[in-house]
Every structure is written in structure tokens, then in C-alpha cells.
Image (cartoon, rainbow, N blue to C red; front, side, top):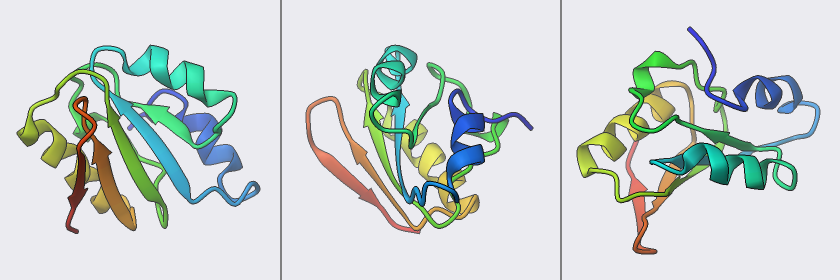
Length: 107
């Protein structure tokens, strides 16, 4: 399985840099937004627009995740993403929606 965009870098430095907070951009502008954040926040990854989260190996073990929705994604899609992040060992998954509401997903 492949890593999501920016995931290889994150996987390589996660333990060295003690990264435990990850920003995951999703939606139509996910790659552009993640690229903009990446230089200042090395814990940034993205899910290409509308890709299935099951296609990826998520380097999120023991991390808190903030999903940042760039395009009003459907709730079923958000739930699927949270499911796979928890499956790969995320501690807490939250989502900042396009309308600035915050969702917190239970494990």
C-alpha cells in the first residue's frame, strides 16, 4: 500500500522530530493547501480529492489528527476517513469543516 501525499516525509521524520499532531487536508483543494502548510508544519499530509482512504497506509500511530475539509465533503466520506485513521492507530480524530464547524470522531 502506498502512503498519502507528503506521507513518506512524515513517516521518515515522525519519531525523530517528535511529531504527534497531524494535519490532513481533504477535498478539491487538498494538495494545494497541504503544500502551502507543509513547509511550516511537517506533520501535514493530504488525501487526493475523493480518493478512497482504504487505498493508503496512514502514518498516524499515536497521533492526534485534524482533518481540514477544503470542499464540503459528505459525512459518510468523513466517517470513512476517520475509521481508517483510527484503524492505523490515531489517538484522536477531529475535522474542521468548510463552514468552520468542528467535528470530533469517536474511536
